[in-house]
Image (cartoon, chains in turn cyan, orange):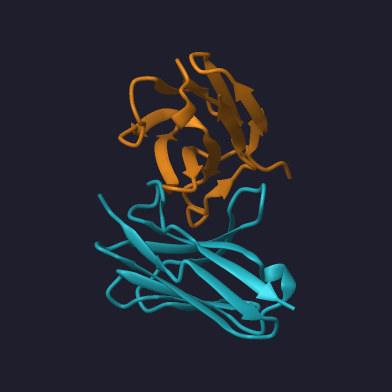
Length: 111
Length: 114
């Protein structure tokens, strides 16, 4: 089956620093998504990418859909305490298909 | 607007008991997904429905697991008999084809089997 490799597994950073995380896949996806999960909650969609090469921003977040359709990255600029959480990449083949998730990146911000 | 609603939020049950998890998708959504999350395996897709019809149940662990969607506003995930290794958070999610297929998650059902 398809696998998503997400890295890094965890990040310990200072408030105000920029963050970068990425996902690679063994096969092609037609949609890439990035979710954030807070403790005790379900994943919440941050950014959705629908075209190879697409670069999309949502406030301090920027994500790109790789040209090969096998990878994506998420950047967070000027991190703040509420950015703490687990970030998941997810790939989707067809519009009505389920998502395949990466294992997540735990972001921890030190004041 | 109400999001995806799951119940119960938390359940502790004894091994061998039947567990039923419930989900109400967002009104108007026509796809529903059941996921399981554990520390070891992360988020795994168990089964999903389109227009109330099961499309792919290849992620269902074994015959002890079953899912139904009798109508567009309700789905259940049943485990019978439950085992300690079934302890996990079970998420229900829904989407509407045409809305960029954005998938919205519920808050999860935290299951502990002792």
